[in-house]
Image (tube, rainbow, N blue to C red; front, side, top):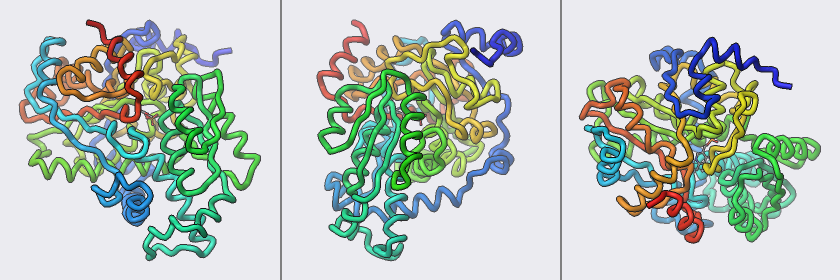
Length: 436
Ligand SMILES: *Cc1c(COP(=O)(O)O)cnc(C)c1O
């Protein structure tokens, strides 16, 4: 059945043999270009990201009104950037490496609404769709105060429309909660990896949850198929969406402002390294793109995938992108990192990252739990397993001295992609999995 000649690939690219053996690997992207050249080869632009940023600003008065927990940030959804010096010591001791630069944690686990990075792209695409409909129906202009969207005439309009999405969990949470708040009828098609508490929480909020005993690819295909037959239904397509990507990319300007505020310099002598957990590639791709727009050649972005689900890695290495799945390479796509349990990559994120990404590494589930426990013990910060995939990044690049990552002028940012809404009992189990 498999159309991919895995033997041929393993011979051509020996690292593929290691990947097929479920070993942890580190891949340096041979196709990376200078950022200036790279940006001319992709079909997304700085204007796309600016448009998303402006739209989020227009929506801020509405967000602040309907999610009062966002009043502190005036309706802008953002997360803290936190120094984690104690965790840095733990990494040094546990992995026998010196980390001379500073180690920071981008705490998207503390993102409002979904407690994950999905509050960037997912929320953004729902808002954009709502804005489009409201303008089409003459209820809104871009100059209005968007707080009016909390009114009954908007809820009435949106209640005539549907939104659907396929998800391993967190995307469903962000899109389900935001869509339900606006008044849409929303259906989330959940893969087998999705946690029970996420399904329960969505149903409590009036979201229709359809469960599949299969992986993400099946859930998303079913959702897409069902949405296609209904013209009132808008499908948020995690494998194809550019709007999700632009929503994520706004993180670039946000973190640039946070770095500036804390006095962290990024330039030729002071490089920035960013480690991003990766599923389909949309969220890490969007964030990395946003960062490259701002910091250019002075930022080095790496994706992190589970050893059982290296879909973007196989897609980028072979250049076949969405045409390959991890299953075709004999891997089962089973991982405790549910946010990363994706067997087939996005149709565009890997291609877009081809000239811009520094590399990808894989990590075993066992390491995720070990790092999860270390972070709780050293910093008191609780993340979901997926969100720890970036934590081993500094160790991996420093051991290889990639792009002078072992300089004391380097800053390393681990992107903590989620965990903010995980129930305590669930979190206790994760912690125990981290061993003694
Ligand atoms: C979705 C998700 C990711 C990866 O995002 P993709 O867009 O699928 O690559 C990483 N971590 C967490 C916690 C997630 O929910």
